Amino acid sequence: MILGLVTRYCMPRAPTYQGKSAAAWFGEYARTMNTREETDRLNALRSFGPAVLPVLLKAMHARDSGPKRLALVVWPKLPAMVRSRLPSPIPAAQLRYRAYAVLAEMDPDSDEALRTLLNGLKDTSQAVQIQCARGLARVAQTSPEVDAALTAACNDPDPMVSAQALATLNCVGSNSAENRRLAQRVARTLPSVLSSYLPGIVSGELAWKSVRQLAKDLKRPNREYRYAATLALRERGLAAREALPVLIESLDDPYYLVQMGAVKTLGQLGSEAKAAAPALTRMLNQTTDEPLHRAILQALHCIEPISDPQVEKE
Image (cartoon, rainbow, N blue to C red; front, side):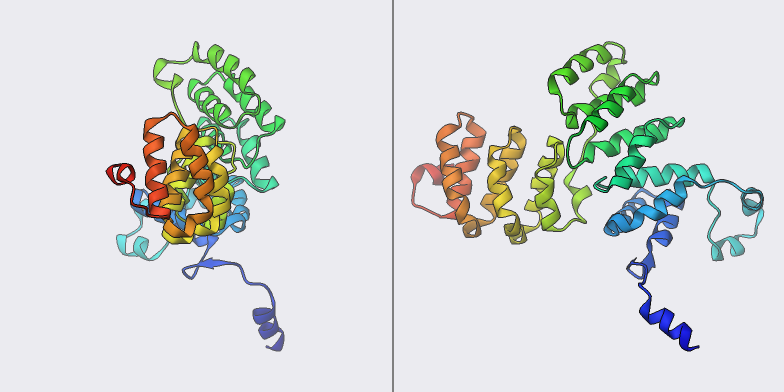
């Protein structure tokens, strides 16, 4: 009894979210067919961060044993009352695919997660390959290894795998000139509907992140990810002031939308973003883009209101 109490209170407990473990949330996610519930459960799994990876890796190696196959056959024949009280069995193929789908929606910032995505690009399943190519759009930094894996996938005979790999490589590849040549060559072999395919990342997918995490996201190689991070920070209101230094750096981002996103987020911070005023003023004097010019003027007015007819007109 004493040993049981010691084990219970002294051993580290597995993390939970809303009272449920990562394994329980993944089971619910793998079973659901409802889009809204699927999103809620995916966000719950994201909240675990790296702690969810062991659950995903286990699911990726799932196999349908004899008893499992029997349960899959018997389950639909059980009375509805019995099925309502028990979790339904999940086919190994569904578990495996769903595990890769979750991994593709998380940042592959650990070596193990990155390795899993790279290996998944060589999988025999088209769906798994596409998910892994999508997931690599979220890498924290470029690398020759990621370039090589995506380049190989660009030459996959399956046009959907090739299109997704090419889109991701264009987002995170480290050799832009070589990528452009590859893109031109591969695009000629793809159906027109796939040649312009892009792996979108929207701010809602980052809602589970802290402001500190979003600040780090402003440095990711994928420009679409950086832009989504500026939007997600804007949605945090004044809490985004913790990311002020990185937002100021983002004013020099090579991607126009990231610049615009950073300007508007700084403007929303008002007087909390006073430190950004010199950089914004310098940017105002250098830009020739009219929409960006107006956005900067508005941001400066929000940071430090002045009686300027031009600003008030804007």
